Each structure stands twice: as structure tokens, then as C-alpha cells.
Amino acid sequence: MGDQRVGGMSCQSLKKAKPFLAMVSLQFGYAGMYIISMVSLKRGMSHYILATYRHVVATIVIAPFAIVLERKIRPKMTWPIFLRIVLLGFLEPVLDQNLYFLGMKYTSATFASATVNMLPAITFVMAIIFRLETVNFKKLHSTAKVVGTVVTVMGAMVMTLYKGPIVDFIGGREQSHHKASTESADQHWVTGTLMLLGSICGWASFFILQSFTLKMYPVELSLTAWICLMGMVEGSIVSLIMERDLSVWAIGWDSRLLASVYTGIVCSGIAYYLQGFVSKERGPVFVTSFSPLCMIITAVLGFIVLAEQVHLGSVIGAIIIVFGLYTVVWGKSKDAPNSKGIVANEKGTRELPITDTIRSSSIITTTTTTAADSNNDAANSKVSKIPHA
Picture 1 (cartoon, one colour):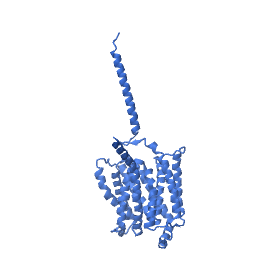
Picture 2: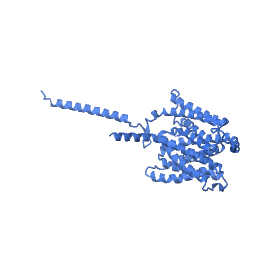
Picture 3: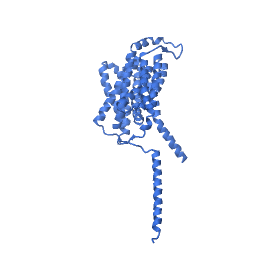
């Protein structure tokens, strides 16, 4: 009996930890994407081609799993669902990724990963617009969400408008070989930052629309495969328009192939599925709350692998963004007790779950009622046995 109870508690703890483990693992995957993509872009690969090849790989990898594993539970495709998938295929695979890669090329991998910390705040603002979130200034946690959003935007403005001196974490490190690339980055720093902000807005829109689409089409693998397929088709059209030279499509056994395969499998296929799964369980704001971990990992890898320069403005802005981010997340976490009481059943309607407390209360009530009925029956039987005068 004790072993069964311990086993049940461990399974329940593992189930609760799954969303956290999934999101932490995903940040390591994203950090690797920033470094590998930056290497391929610096070696002349077009970001349009990279985004297209990325979803070619993702479609090839994810589609077979979706076809086999969800063949019995996949709902019928309708025009409203298909149009949403087409829009999802544009928002993240085309708009977000191309703006992000171009912005990262103009700035740095570390700076680009730091701007991703604005994602939870922008997602929160969009959630308010679409009435997925509510704000009540009479409550502290609700006010904290608004204050955290404002602080996050202020941190992004600091990173954009103030570059500052280079922060040399390892004293005496040689920086001369970065002179040309630094001057080029200085000229396009503001432009690159604006592109990154546009990319984050597209990504936040993707999360909001994905949460709505999952309510109509609640099969994560199939939705992932459709998004990757639409991203491949739409990305190919954009690439053919923007890149007239067909030689840019050439790819060999080099960093271009590695970037396409890695980002396709890890950052499109696996990432879309995990984000959809966790968003369905915890909501889109929870999905975006782990980005500071990715920033730290990318900063370390970028400094070691790419020998990137870290500026004081980026450090100060990143600290402000992280503070604002976790203010938003703290306020959001206080909403959880209010939202856990209502869940969606298989038909899409909202109903209250039967918790253990309710079950135990109903059992006690039923037992008490049964005992009372038994006592009444016994009393009645005794009365019936008394001889009439």
C-alpha cells in the first residue's frame, strides 16, 4: 500500500514537472540555434533560404509521426482551421524567422537572444487585447503584470538606445580582429533592433493564434506538421521573390546543412510541438517565461564560440528586462489558482473538474446520508414490530 502511494506521488510530481523540463530543454535547443545560425549567416547563407530549408526538414521529420500517431483522433479539417494554419505558417516560419535572422546578422547572437525576453510582455499585452487576460488594479498581482510589462519595454529601449563600452569578461582578450564587423554592426544597430522587435511581435502573435487554433484542432503533432508545411510553401515563395540568384539554394556538407537540419528538427518540429503541448496545459505566457535562461546560455556560447563583444548597454538592458519579465510571471502565477478551477473537456465546453477534495467530501456526505437512512430504516422496522393495541 505504501509503495503504491509513493509511486503515485512520484508519477504525479513527474507530471507536474513535465512542462518545466520541456521548456528548460527547449532553451538549450534555442541557444544552439542562435550560435549555429549565426555561423552559417556569417559564411554567406541567405536567411530566406535558411528559414525555408528549416521547414523542409521539419516537415519531413514531423509529418510521419503525425500521420501514424494521431490518425484516429485527428478531427476533420475545415476552412476556418486551414486559414488559421496558413496564417500561423506566415507569422512564425516566415515573418518572425526572417526578421530575426536579419536582425541577428545586424547585431549579434547575444543581443538577439536578449531581446527575446520581451516576448512574455508582448504576449501579455496581446492577451489583454484578445481578452485572454484581465487586469484589475485593485489586486497586487494584476498590477504587477502591468508594471512588469512597462519595465520590460524600458529595458528593451535601453538596449536599443544605449550601446555603451565593451564589457571585457576576460581581461586582456584580443579584440582587434572584430574591428570591421563591429563598425558594420554599429551602422545597422538600430535597424537590427527594430527588426528583432518586429520578429518578437510576430512570434507573440503566433502564440496567441496557436492557443486559439488548438481549441478547434486539438492535435499538437498534426498542427505542427501543418504549420511546418505551410511555412515551407510560403517561405519558398518569399525566397524566390527575394533571392533571384538560384545559386543561393546550393547546399553542401557544411555549416549550411547543419543549420538547416538542426533548426528544422529542434527549433521548428520539436519546438512547435512542445510549445503547443505546454500552451494547452499552462497557457502562452508560461511558455514564454523561460527566455532569460536562453539568453544566459547564448551569451556564454557566443562569447566563447563566436568571440562576440558584449556591450554595457546590453547587460543593463538585459537585467532590466529580466526583472520586468519575472514581475509579469509572478503576477501571472497568482492567477493560476483562479484558472485551475475551470478546464475544458473533450467537446470544448468549460466545466469544473472533480478534485480529490470534492470527491472526499461527496464520499463523506454519501456515507453520512447512507448511515442516516439505515438508522431510519431500522427505527421504522422496530416501530412496525410493535403490536397494535
